[in-house]
Image (cartoon, rainbow, N blue to C red; front, side, top):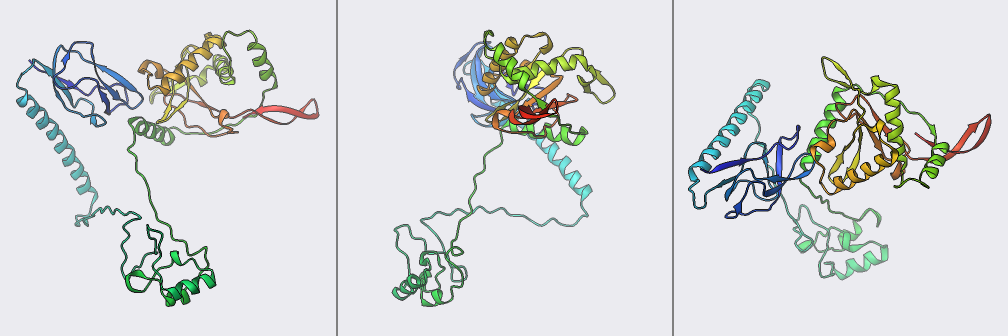
Length: 390
């Protein structure tokens, strides 16, 4: 009997998945454990395994297309098995769900509106190219020719040259948009104001990751009261310590690694900061898991250094480097980004002095780290050069 494979829920916040690439095609033999496809969740690209043995009979979501969680992804069964009734049943079920959603939407609109007829809105798409420019007598266009020629009378060209007017950028009122004497005489601007540009844009579909980042950070910003505190920390001793550590450490220690370790130690001394707001209760976490924001092409991921207070600087350094590479390769797994109790976001490497980060739920706090810079500081009543970080 044929089995329906549905779009999996690969994270707790995932509502829709996008098939990045099918690794099997219709007609291929499939065994349980074989990788069927790579699926983009809201946080990463993950390999999706088959749970069934048989032949891939049907693909419901093509490459680069998305579908809601639990919708039909594929059908696996016996070679030559008739699955037309099964496909029809699935499509009918999905269509029924969509109709229900449309009905609910109409109810909301009806309740909110005054009963008046809504005006029809038509969206028109206009395409243009530099080799095909339309003009009308009411709206003449600049004389831009792909062969380098400008449509203008000899007299108009001579007058334009004398007055320093770029004839190629004028709107011609003669036959066929030709620039004539009247256009030169009526020109009242300068050469700079005569330039005519063309507006253009490019629209790129939003990835599942970006959709989720936008939704979760908007929820955090508007549901969690944010207040910001900034301190300026003298980093001279930390710089000396890092230099000394790196002479004997098995891996290179970064300032970010030092910050993670320092934060973990601080949370051990201030446990009420290491908490989560759960609506009816506040959870005071006895373990310390530090989320480290990592920028990737599609957005921002926050892998978690677990039990950071019990790890050495070298262990933290190796773990963070591994997470950063996995994030860029889209190989992070749900276990890598779940369970944070506190988050650090560091933009110091980009020359940022300070910034305001948004709390990463369910944390109660996030630390925004700026760059280390040389500045004038006061030590023992004396003004001297030092290194500070906000």
